[in-house]
Length: 426
Length: 205
Figure (cartoon, chains in turn cyan, red):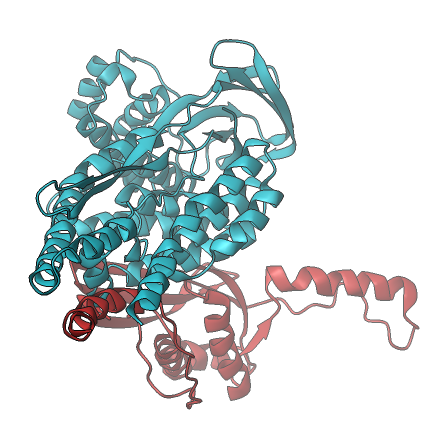
């Protein structure tokens, strides 16, 4: 009887192992820049403990193929589910402490939750709904304020671009005080991540000076000028007085790191029980593209890196590691207690109990890996009109990897037009 | 055999508890009155929309702007066009549905009439242009006969949220105003405030 139950449990727990297998098919389709095939490969992962992750990946792949409306629906589903999953599950915790971390529902790291709002906001902007984009930006602020009311900032980073992007949305809608606050928070977040002044994205440096100047923040402006070595910027023009519009191009470069299992099973020479160390590790997928050159109407601009998701993932995993190790120790202790109890009655059978536990104990390798490896941004000021925008992706070691023309991009006076491209290359 | 009876159930119970989390149940559906208060997540919902609409309609029909207009225009109904109602809150709120509710009640009161908004009239004008070419003389609706609005309705929905951990205080403020199209005078301002305390459970099954 119990042999059958053991096999059943192994199969159920082993269901999590199929996650990585299916994601490999998704990765292969994305590596060929075929989001349609990736969506099909992703479909079997719907439901269960990884539903939120499925929705995140689905939303991102739909974005890649330009289906922003369906991407909004997927991301909205993920958002509500992740909020619900914030509450601690008694059954999942019991399962994770006895069997495997994979029995927890996927809740997402903080940087993933912030980027969910960023990409949802970008979806709305690309659908021509700036007010809905603003709602997402407000939710970024609310999430950070709710989780970290003392600092309003992510303790392990990952919030810099979310704040920077918030500033862009506020600026687009003419809410300039809010834009200044968001740009300032972005600057502080980059600093907290250890980014020096000369590596702060130049567009952010310029925005800080522009809005500090416009809002009459004299001392703050003097500080930025000294730190960044900037003494001129395009003035902020109030009340629709700006004759130009702005093109904001966001380049999503490659794919975020995968998590791979690091697993070691050892057997005690004394009681023959099995012990496991099963932890996830990150494997970065370095993109073949270095940056992008945006050319329009005789102007050109090179994209600047504004977020390294590979670095965000590394910081998040490092922060989570003490708890993962503690849970792993707890699982080993529980298995050892059970095995010792069994050994007292049936000498030698405890080894089978601990082996069963060791086989079921798989590290949680789930991660939102359809995010890009890094996010880059370029901003150009243009007179109102309709433009064809040419984007060249430059190889990490030189040469043009590929070129795409975005036709009929409309620029309106005093407004921003957001365009994005996600290109996968290894 | 004793082994199976004594230890196997406890190990399996712990393991099964964890695996239980993956089980799903069939949803239960219960039909209820649209007027029944149902707060599930604490977000803006149909009850908030209904309460706000009722308050706005009551204020709009009870305030002096209506009588002032009627006495100045020989008991004629004022004509209103819906302008920009901006959602600057931290939640996605279905503004058009909410405004449609207000519009419907005001039209049905017989005291206010609305003309098609800028989003709605494009299709109507296209059809009228088409009638000019294709409809018979007797049924054709000529161009240039639209009713000009006396007032434009504008407004905002905003939120102030104080949240920490599992507790949040949500304050919604809905402001609507009617602006005289000829003079730019703000003829009426309506306001509805809603405050909620939302506490999330720290645990789930």
